[in-house]
Length: 132
Picture: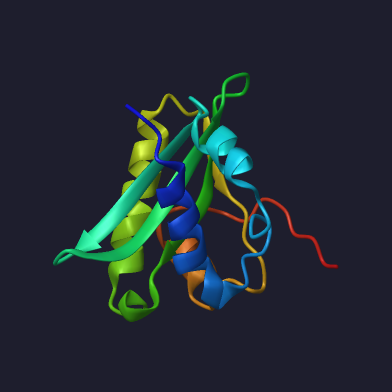
């Protein structure tokens, strides 16, 4: 399979814009290529009637068998329509199926107000909190 780094970059901006995702905004094409070509990254796209409804990325650490839901989100027109629960369920199922011993996600106060509730409803628990 050939990684299509342009798609990951597009999805990062499309989904992340309303939530002020800034960490990769200034990345060069080469940085995107390197990131997406990792054998430890998998990208999943959610489509609804031919429209991009959202996406998520899973990143696996070989040594620990931990899988992080690196990015996860819906596009603006699909927020509040109940799709987040189904997308997160799919992300968790695929993460565990990837020989994971631990599945985790990092969130912050800029995330959607229902994010923590969605994570908890899928069986995730708060592991750590940082206040800055």
